Amino acid sequence: DAGDPSDNPFCDPTNTKYSTAVNGFLDMNTVDIGYHYKRHGITAIDLVSFTAHEEASSMIISWETGAEIDNAGFVLFRNVAGTTEYKQISGMVEARGTAASGGSYRFVDDTVRRGILYEYWLVDIETSGKWTGHGPVTAKLPSALELTELLVLNHPVSRR
Image (cartoon, rainbow, N blue to C red; front, top):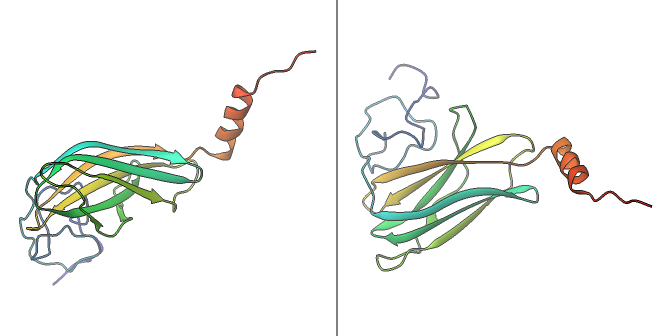
């Protein structure tokens, strides 16, 4: 038990190999230094789409599955593009799809700031604890200056 628990490379949705949790769930917060269980595996969902776009002053993250087998649900993460500080932005989003038909999902992220490019990662978690990360998708709320430029460029010029 030595080292800094906040310096944990396994609190990362892009991690494809290990979890410190014995149930295999993705490490989502600061964890104790210790053994890392190899629990990652390919899950049985068919991800049809995963998108992020701005709407008013929020980001809308949407995804759709074609099929879901033994899927417990999803967790969303976000980071500022170019950094590796991932933040969990959702709790467990319960699965709605089945093996015969998938599900449609939507999450509103209203904790974003204007002018910053964000990356979003989606993690699907099976009932057995296996998980798979998907992404990133990127989106940005325009800054006030960008909004002004868009309004000027799209405003028709009146002539007399």
